[in-house]
Image 1 (cartoon, rainbow, N blue to C red):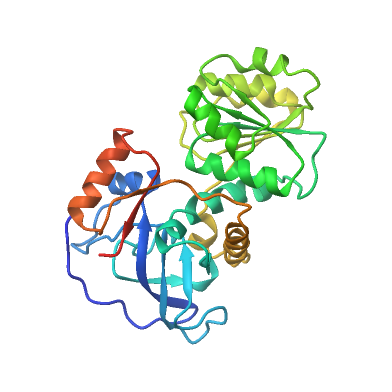
Image 2: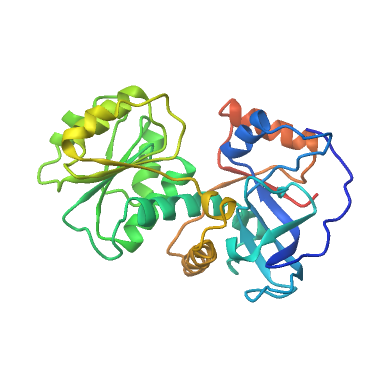
Length: 321
């Protein structure tokens, strides 16, 4: 990572917005990109995904925004990122920034919010206002995606929610997000589930950290014809464990829609606007922030090191450059 002075992006075309970036957040995805993405033919790579900012100019086909609008978004893997003063981003994957939140807090939301929403309602097909006779298990309940998923499931559905945590502090946080029950994922889950008398069947599992032992636990407790959702990159899994339950496995990558320009790409715009309304109304709680000041290469290296060493309390955000 190094500080560079690059030319400003060209004027937007098509449905692109030219955004003056006001704040960015750091996610585990940033660490993966730093390790796996290399410059091509000497062209620098600008990383960074979660961001908020102000629309400076719009492409000729833009219909959702105009200059001066405050927006937030999670970007995409195959374009230049948000760790720069200006960025081009497609309007279909941006939303109106929550008016009640600062740019810094708004920047902490999109990637985890989109991942949680798409997994719950697109991949696991959780029904809005339904599922009172079923149970959702959220494995790894205190993480950034997990806290959004538990809140969204509690706000928008009637499903019973089990979160998991291995420390008392994390367990308190999971309950605070809205989980009805909290189990210890450092111990076998099946006996703990069995101890919850009268619990409806676990028809959906959302896993953020899938070890081989966690997979065996999931295979044991998932209901027949249930759904399991994964977002991490586990070692090869033995799918034979779930064959005779006819369980389906679903991956979620919130970059899929923009990277492949799917026909429903603008759904991310709709999701972000719904999240914005829930944040403005106070129904949805944003994460705690770890504010790292202005963004530069030295500060970003420190942020990555702190994340790798698990030495962070809250979502890392930067304010300006």
